Length: 299
View: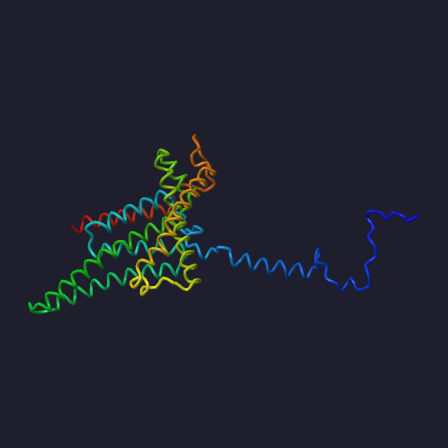
């Protein structure tokens, strides 16, 4: 009669079982190696924070979101109106200080370099135009070209400053902070919801655009200025069409995210972020008042 084996007991392994790999239950070293390989594959496919420019918010000043909105509106009104070069430089310096609190130095350097290039080019074109003499046809054509350069440089430098202050607003403010601040202002939901969705739409669109560029580089059709000028149709096909397709998905995702977070909930809302005015907000408001005063005093 064959004795029944207890369910907890296992038959003895053969002598060479220690050296035979078990495909079902690999040894610890093999499991760690497989885990490292899987982690490596996940890292290749994962979106790292460095890829997303606005993936996390950073604000060393801890300004109230309402102060940031006031700064963005004030700077845009100043730089897009009739502004003197000194006032434009003052707005640029104020925006640069705010952007420095986000500690994204490479992007800040590129933004500042673009402003200096545009405004410096406009000043050089103005100097070349004033130093030109004569009324020949060649000088007239050159002056017309210089006028276009001056106009483009001055206006584009203004848009650089306006974009920088809104970049600071997006990079330093989360959707929860902005929603809580707008709720404190007793604004209707018809205003709060679109503003909050717009704040999150730009980072998502930029992340998708960067992913499109990475895909084009992997396929050997990297977007260069030469290819854009030589084949504009391919640029539309490879960049704009995927971006438009992803824009619809971004809008749906943001809407679903807002509903999950209770963005459309009626009644009183709470926020884990401390919302309130402090000393830094007072300093920023005083600087804005000084910029507005200098704008009207300089008339």
